[in-house]
Length: 113
Length: 111
Image (cartoon, rainbow over all chains, first blue to last red; front, side, top):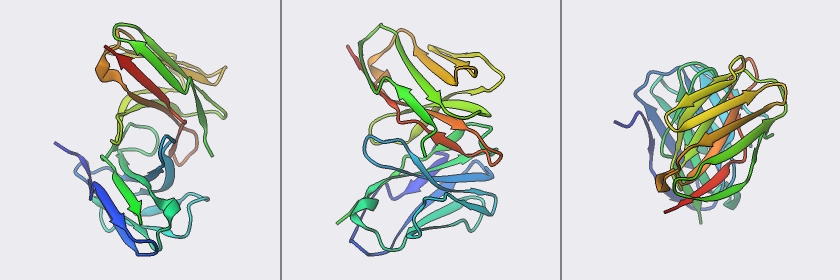
């Protein structure tokens, strides 16, 4: 049974048109992460939540925002996608910050046209 | 910034052979984890090794950690075609506990 679910698996958006990616979890984990992964590169941390505490990486562009309305759901909003934002976006959860394994969703592949 | 660097970048072996890949990092860590990623998919956790541990095993996987050298290795024994994937190390370094990934090693196992 899927424990971290990302929707949609594939998303095509127009240049400059806001887009939202979603992530839900059934693990009741306190920590949720969003990573961006470009082709043949390492996943790059964008932000993470510890409960409702939001932690933004210093180099995450302002174009990227996130919401976590409750424990189970987390959203990634890209306000004005550019061609350089085309990537795989990975959501992950963890019971404890950095001290336990992370469970990843299957990712959302974002294409910007 | 990237904390871990992996070596080699790519590895091609035949079924039955062992595969070894290494991860070096720059700063002291709380723990180090290894993940596998099949093409176009999410990451799957393999092993977590804490900074006070030196070796862990899980099935055909063996992970070592040398904190004096700031390095870790992942050994896959008796490899199978299904082991074909990219393998990433991830280190947890700060009080927030977030972890950062290395660049990964792409492993291809041919029948």
